[in-house]
Length: 458
Image 1 (cartoon, rainbow, N blue to C red):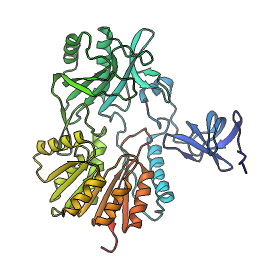
Image 2: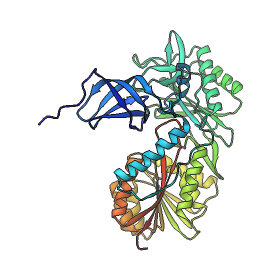
Image 3: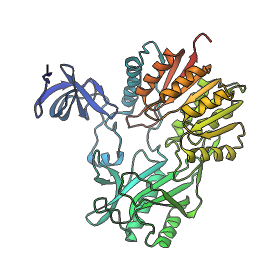
Image 4: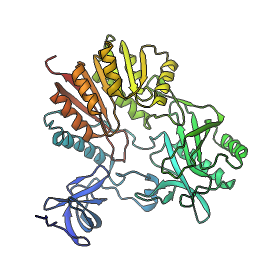
């Protein structure tokens, strides 16, 4: 029998918000039927308009607030432009931390059935502003003027902005100056609809510990008009710049970077440190965008690994070797594996850069490479995983259960897939000792966790 929904489209309803989605929308329930409403906060009483209904859930628009949350922050339209892409900008920072910690607790209990687990208070930032060391800013045109900023949610409309409250000041300055120079020189912005124009994105990367700046110009065309004058002005106005890169993306695509990259001026890489480990960062390198909280995260992973110098460690999903090189300072040997060959080349270079000789890296799928290592006699005492949002591959989880390393350290950027994978490892003979949430991206819905697991009856 077809279920009758308790709400209809275009109706007005009084609600009390009970929860938040990971995108920061308030969740109200009518007879158990969830309605997601942007800008609603838990505990608030409001009048909403139902704008869309699906079989299992609906969407609404906030019409009037009867009772406001003590965590609500009122934001003007001008301020909103400075937040670009932040789903939780309307929540006071201590409220954001409370929400994220609660989200971790609820998801681990609901999906992972881990109700008695030790979950520590979330580690937030003393100053949750101006933390991002990388910007990828779309370029467009409005009223004949070159603009650059961020896309409005669920649209391709660019909101022009000269400052972001979550970008490092040097990044804000760099993007603004490059935008001004390109506008002055008449370099045409990319027109997505017509697939014409030149400049698609301005990317800036900054080494917070070294003060080194990289500018990446992403164009549709293989040539940049007035290139020499452009380079000269960037170098003059941005004295911290060490690298200017040209990336060519001639395709009709939403992907930012194209396949062809060349150095226009300076070095191919800039450098930065996390703790005392030095990293070379290219235009294409994956590198954590919040180095302050990355050190907090990695220090916790190192603490949970509890290395004494005698252990063999496997780092699955090792990327450019960030966690591997931290672990190598305390381990006897580290084996890193990563699917992306270019990342493995970066990992090898970063090991050499730091004089680290006890870390080896191999390209391939973790679920294929790690069993091969196991058969060759490389049995890990500690295994570290830091997978993408989809979590660990099922085959890798079964390999871990078969290998039986004494300890597993799981670094996660998605509490839901973490909960699923912890349940599988628990059922396979492991016990989750503790979980530490870390706020890597203030004012967004994302939360990272580090979990420590030990082999039962070990």
